[in-house]
Image (cartoon, rainbow, N blue to C red; front, side, top):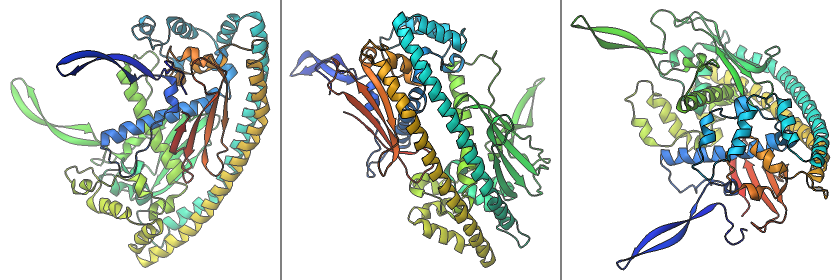
Amino acid sequence: AWKEGKDVTVKVVEKKQKKKGKVRTVKVEEPTDSFFNFFSPPQVPDEDAELDEEEAEALNEQMEHDYDIGYAIKEKVVPRAVNWFTGLAVDPENDFDDDEDDIDDDDDDDEMDGAALMRRMAMLNMSATQRRDAAVAELPKDVQGRVEALETLQKTTDELHDEFNAKLKALRAEYDQKKAPLFQQRAAVVNGADGGVPKFWLQALQNHPEVAEEITKADEPILEYLSDIKCTSDLGEKKGFQILFAFKENPYFTNTELTKTYVLDPDDDDDCVSEALGSDIAWKEGKDVTVKVVEKKQKKKGKVRTVKVEEPTDSFFNFFSPPQVPDEDAELDEEEAEALNEQMEHDYDIGYAIKEKVVPRAVNWFTGLAVDPENDFDDDEDDIDDDDDDDEMDGAALMRRMAMLNMSATQRRDAAVAELPKDVQGRVEALETLQKTTDELHDEFNAKLKALRAEYDQKKAPLFQQRAAVVNGADGGVPKFWLQALQNHPEVAEEITKADEPILEYLSDIKCTSDLGEKKGFQILFAFKENPYFTNTELTKTYVLDPDDDDDCVSEALGSD
């Protein structure tokens, strides 16, 4: 509830207006950048609304960005707010661009001021402790004492966080161990001497929307030789995971196994990839589907001749040649860096989908029971008629997908199984029994994980209350605590304009809860002192997540007026 003339989410501009032959200047409000746009999230349109591909992609990007900011505040800033305030949590090498040209760019009033940019630049040459000491030294002596008290609370919070992570790791290992024999039995049925279940992994991968987009027609006959996919998080002292693809003897390459390994940053709770490694594929002569042979004209000594050269082409097997982070000395411009980042994110998304989605529920992906056609596949019938590109999925597969749109999950499963020979149907039913047991273990794990999170949220709550008491103490507390904590987080900082800063100085606390009653998700509550900008004492942002998706798939985002 903005007070008159105080709404920083709009700007007043003058426009020329022509009416009855006369031109007059009128003042109109237009939307502008502001952190407070966070409370007006992008909305999913009604089912009847039609979006073209470009509009849908733009909306998806907006929703992803909005969630990323909320997630960063909930999972990064709030739990470690003291360290963000002092700069101890900042990783300037990764968090901030070290382009000094930014410091001189003062054309845009909404950009961060020069002093803040200079402070960030200085961070590049400091250790974490030096950053903390420099930030605290700028504070009055009495405030320094309060910050030290906050750091004691933060240390206890961090110890609880480490304790939680250790228990989480043990819980994952326990359930990985329980699932392992079920996956072994699955492989025995799929590859049985009685003929097993042909094309099991090919069909399971093709029924997952993200992975399906990586598979070309040329890949399909090779993936028919795929006998198993195994995953492990045991990389010794490193954090990450490896996916192993086991192949029967085949006419395409000599490898019996191909692996893809993701090494993650050990100091980051999110899955931040520090390195991705893939197997070298020993292709047999003329069988490499990651290249295509093209004819090119070549001029030499005045004569033109036609030569055949190999060029890279789309293939699932490019997955084993992941994009690499260049050496520190290599310089990338902004466009190159952004393109590389997108490639690495896409590569990780595919690996994550295979590990977390396809492998645990492979039987249901094979039968189509796991498919959500409404969300997973585009229902544009024009795609079915597009056979110009040999690398596109064949018409039969597309027709099968279109048919899925009008089927229930059980109907999809029954239709897929009915197409199989009788003996194979019996094996699939045996696989479904194994899958049911695996799913029960998965549900059991999720229930224990929910209880574990609740236990540690309860343990941290009094520490956060004590933190708020110090920050907002009657003795003056710690001025600008939350403003500085938010501005020191790179993603959140980009949302904050100069016009937002004086308002965020009135921010007294940020609280998070995952208790949304029967709904899955979380809410972030921003508590404000009385201020000259709006009458609200609290602003909230709520993310309602899809209850049937283990990933954080947002079904609705709601913000305070």
